[in-house]
Image (tube, rainbow, N blue to C red; front, side):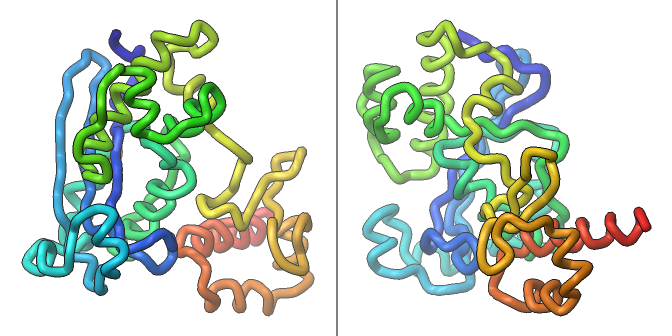
Length: 256
């Protein structure tokens, strides 16, 4: 079957130096761009993360420091990657909680603005977990009746993710074949940032989800404790979280 698309969607997968979205870096990125007419465009690059790849991580994805020593850094690739995905929705496996947040960090470090305001994100893992509770390898076998060769290879995982989503839409009548529905179905809590430090309350207002101000409106705390904003910007929070906090502060100042 073919997905019912109103704009392109980029399925992507990252291999990284670890799982900390603030401090870890991309070592491989693979993108499968699918157009509304079914045309497909593939992009896969090894990336020099500029920091060591831990041996235990190399054992997972097979990429070592030697493999990426002469490869371009993400900053060198950022513009072409952004040009590829800027007009597209995004899809992946566990992408809402890991791949998109980490990609956003890398983009911001490369001085490229990145947000999700005008695009949908479909997390195939969330759909899978809601329906069957399995891993990508099992999902590929369950939905596509195929064995996933080269698991933890970014390109193999990306292609498998795309095939699994198409099979999910074909299998479940309750899944509508459009990106908006699939994005909403595959979302978890509604976060104002990617990492989950800022959440929305019932009125759609940004609130802190952690620490002494958990559950309190961001605008209230930034007004009553201006020093807290400075602490947040200098602390070890993701760049995207800091970007959202800054935009909230500027919005509040402009509304006064």
